[in-house]
Amino acid sequence: MKTIKWLLFHEPAELFIRTAEHFEKELNRRTGNAFNFEILELSDYERKYHGGKQCDPLTELKAGRVQMSQIY
Image 1 (spheres, one colour):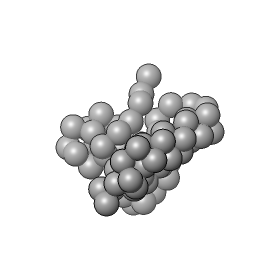
Image 2 (image 1 turned 180 degrees about the vertical axis):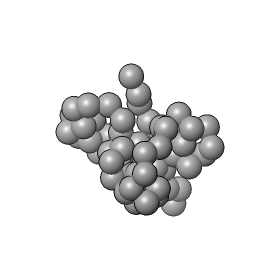
Image 3 (image 1 turned 90 degrees about the vertical axis):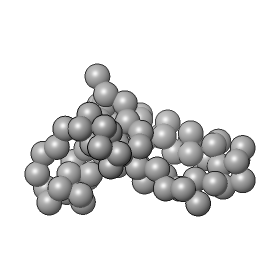
């Protein structure tokens, strides 16, 4: 199973969380549960992976530490 980190950078996060969860369910329905999503708001991502320090979502994407995002 492939894990995909999805960094939610856009507000309001609740709308995007529901959309991301729905996308995960639909993708797994079509692929036989081939993916696991770690859906994180920016503050949660920074806390978990950067010791609470701010980070740039584009840098995280370019470095491959995050596989999906949507930004302004």
